[in-house]
Image 1 (cartoon, rainbow, N blue to C red):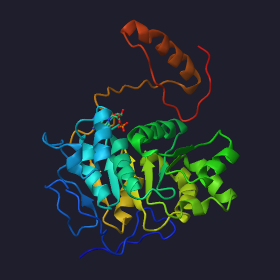
Image 2 (image 1 turned 180 degrees about the horizontal axis):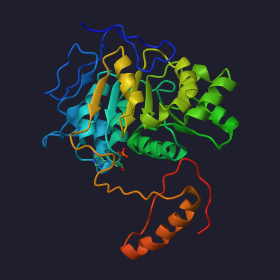
Image 3 (image 1 turned 180 degrees about the vertical axis):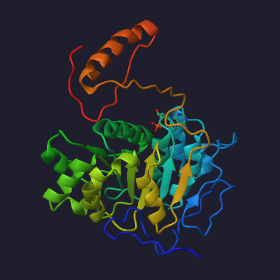
Image 4 (image 1 turned 60 degrees about the horizontal axis):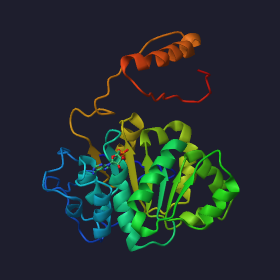
Length: 311
Ligand code: AMP
């Protein structure tokens, strides 16, 4: 017997539709059948078959051409599995590693729908950091280059009056960090109506956005979005928050998890050094001063907060 699922009405992450989407059917990977289960998990999340191209996924001609012009000849697995689902109106949770083509997996079907009905803010993308917001905007602009796409980035550390004016002009796509969009929504009564016809909510790096620290921000965002929007969550790691969310999903969200052997980053070698906190910076500085000797030209340092250390 199926268990009754309780959904927090104030935290409706996945959309609830009373009837299935009536859109034109698009081909889905043949091995995946709709099941009456709540969690529509893809059991065959393997590679893209060699004959499959972007046009086989149901994307418009202009989108296929743009992909070709950008050197994207063939869909990556996350794109092959998720694009048809998004086009058919399903909510999606996609787990795939960085560099797998996740961004295009949601941006392409969103832009495809946007081209059909370009009125208002069609899509709100929420991402945890400013850097990611700008990177996402770059990809949206490249993929939507032939649509005269208006894409706004709304992140902290920038002028709020300018951001309010930009939002009032109803760009097609808004890419925001949770804190800044919450402030704008709450401080100006003209902002929530800007999102009244939004069709897609994307949480990129969803594991981090769903972190408890962003719960209030997410509540503010959900309150101004239509209930029948599509929700797309993409993440490189599965966390208990995402797992709970999947279990609570009253809708048949489609869950894509990259093939077996999935790693957060392909070919990543991880090592750690356990050292006292007070000498951490010195060690870091020493390691960075030595990387050239072992043939490494550059490094990325991931931290929770930034402060400048002199080298
Ligand atoms: P992402 O995982 O979204 O960060 O994408 C990583 C990089 O892969 C981006 O620079 C994309 O332009 C590129 N990319 C995305 N999809 C494809 C594809 N189907 N073929 C070749 N490159 C792609």
